Every structure is written in structure tokens, then in C-alpha cells.
Image 1: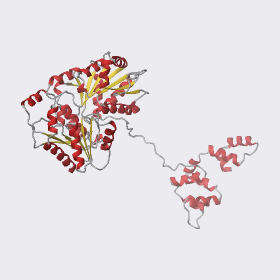
Image 2 (image 1 turned 120 degrees about the vertical axis):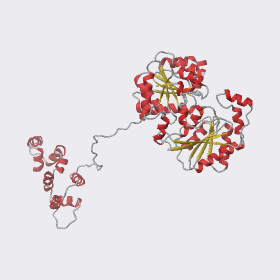
Image 3 (image 1 turned 45 degrees about the vertical axis):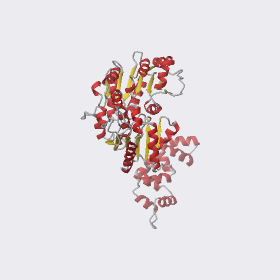
Length: 524
């Protein structure tokens, strides 16, 4: 044990001898040596390693040589061991031979520079827009519209803004207003996802729509996702609910902000933002009410003090063009097919269309019963299937029309489903889940009135617009369901086919639609 005593040092050995009342036992020395001596350092140092191995009994030297691969007869174990280059694995074997437990995982070298990826990121153009929103949200009129195209992360950008707001205004409430269960649940779920990554404290998320109870007792911090129908009802019969929220909230967010100037909705917003310091954020892909009545669009613009933030991308006058070229939006092929039939519009019908915001329901119902027009819709869908589209979204003209198209497609052996406002929640969820799946069999989903907002199916690469409309807002919403690009989890290209009757008006360019209302806003 002279080697061990030498490594332990005279002072430590003298103390151990004193404890044992004489010369310390070998067992005591080994126990202390396992703690004090850095055997790994001895193994790494060539001279120290050679001296250590030389102290082993001949039988142990032979055992170690065999363990390290010596099978040559006539070579002395010690000679073989001293001839080794002692790789990392061989040094680990030596340590294990001496009784040390070695982690066999590769030794990770420290990285002195590496990327640290965020869990809830924004693209640069989204960050730029969010920064400009914050400049307007807390100064002056304290109200602003965030104008982003469908598929460009309007909700995600808003959730980043809300999380910033909650971190800076503890304790406070944010009220999110939207119409329709899909949009409301999307908002609640997305906030939960955002706050778990960006939040700094526990907050409440309250879902208040349909039959949910209006139980806000003790609520002071978090987000209230409030259905517009419930809010309008409260304004009439339970004004104390809106007063409670107004007293505790500092930010109201109105999704699909082009609806906000409807008198019933405006009363709700006015009630929630009555106190000084309350801010209002509108979200929309279509910052206008119509395409033909500029007075309606002026009212919307004035309500937000003409403050709107639109994407700015250097080198482009229209951000949609840039987003398509850069892969954030899918590159659309937009075409129109006309049916051979034609509506025979009376003078009264033409007069009615000239003054209406959209095509009257009676005219659409007549068109939906036309065999030639329906045949053109089905032929258009079949053509898209031949073009290898795996998920096709069809916007039908009515509930009955939606059922009819899905039934005809099913009758010829295709996987076709339909959802409408009359569908049960369970049926709708099952159908939408199948449509969003990665199943290889092509599927067609027909809908009427439920998938224009709050619906996200990145795999959908084609849309058939079989719902005639004069509403640029509605048309833009329908088109927006299939234009999510590859950088946002969607497809590189998409096809949008509008089936029209020659007697009715239509639209055809998603980029031009995005900037349609710029003349009534002073963009921030």
C-alpha cells in the first residue's frame, strides 16, 4: 500500500494511523483513497497510468490485458498494456476495472454558441406589426385595428400582445369578443397555449358563451372569452355584468372587427371601454363592411379613430404579394367557371341587388335548385380531384345545397361530408377532425355558414366557391381558408375556383381584396 500512502500524503496518513491506534489498516486506506485520489486524472496521465498498472499483481495485469483485447500468445500482459494508445473507451474500461461506475453516454462538449428557439414565436413581419400596435394602443384614442391577411397569424400576434399587456398590468382583465363557437374556443385555447409559454403568473381563463354561467365572482386577473350573443343579451337584461367587466378590464379585443359598428355590438364595446385608460384592439383580415358603400366603411374607420396597422414588407407595395413569394401564404391559382344555365333576373330583382349588401336569399335559393349550375359545381370538384388535391373545401349556397352536393359526391363513391349551422357539435367535430387528418384518401368537405371563420385546415389546397356573394368580406374569408403557405404549415400552392352564373357579380384577386379599403384608413 506504499503507492496509496504516497498519493494520500504523510499528514493524512499520520492522522489515519492515529485514528486506528497504530498503522492504519489497508481497508481504511482504500476507503479514503476512493474519495481523495482522482483516479480519472491518473488514468489520463500516461506516466501515472503506467505506474498504476505496474503495481497490479501479475494475474490482474493478465485479466486487464484480456479485457482490453490481448489474444496474442507469448506477449507479456504488462508489455501489451504499455503499448496501447489508450483511447477514450480504453481509459473508461480501465476505470471500470478499478471499480468506478462510468457513464457510457458520449461526453458532451459545451457549446459556446447555439440558437435558443422560442416556444411561441412571431415572424419578423408579425413582430413589426405588433410593435406598431403597442404604440397606438396605450396613447391617444387608445384604439387600433390590426389588419393581417387570413393565414398570416392574426390570432397568434394578438395573443403575444395580450400576454405583454397582462405582464405589464398586473392585476387586470382582458375581454375577448367574438361571434361563433369556433372562434371563441380557438381564442381560449390559443391564449392558454400562449400564456403557458409567455406568462409570469397564474391567471384565469373564463369561457362565457352559449349556456355557460356568467360566474365572475372574485375574478380580477386573466382573460374572459365572451360570446357576442351573450354580451348583447347582457347589455339588455344584465348590464351589471358589463359594468363588472368594465371596472376590472383594461383591454378589449374584438375579433372580426369589421362587424363592430353593428349597433348592438357597438353598445357592448362602448360599455366595456367606458373608463379612461381602457384600450380597444380590433382584429380583421377585411377592414371594411362592404365593397360598394363607402359610408359604411367610413363609419368603421372612424370608430377606430382611423388607426390601423397593416403589414409592411420592404420592397413591396402590397404585403400579400410578398407573403406569397416568401412562402407564408400559398400561391393561389384563381379561376372562374360559368354554368351554362342563366338566371333570368326581373327588373325588381336587379333593383333589389343594386341596393343590397349581398345577393338576396331568394335569388340564391333559385340558383341552388338549378341542375346545370349544380352539375358545374360537381364537375369542378371532380376536376380538382383529377389534379391530385387531397382536401377540397366547398362553400355551398344554402343548407339544402350543401346537403345536395355532398350527397351527389357520395353517390359516386367519393368521401364527401357536409357541415352547416344545423349540424350537432359532435358531428361537426368528427367531420372536421377527419378533414384535418393526414389520411391519404381524398376528402371533400361541403359547408354552409360555419367554416368561413375560426377554421384552420392547412392541408386543404383547393376551395370551390359555390356561394354567390357581393360581399368582399365574405369572399375574402372563404378564400382565406386555403391560402396558408408552407412556412405556416400549409401548402405551397392552392386552387380557388368560383362557380358563377353570368348574371351575378363576383371577385377574383386575393391581393387586391386585401388593400380594397385603404382609401378610408390612415394606416399606422
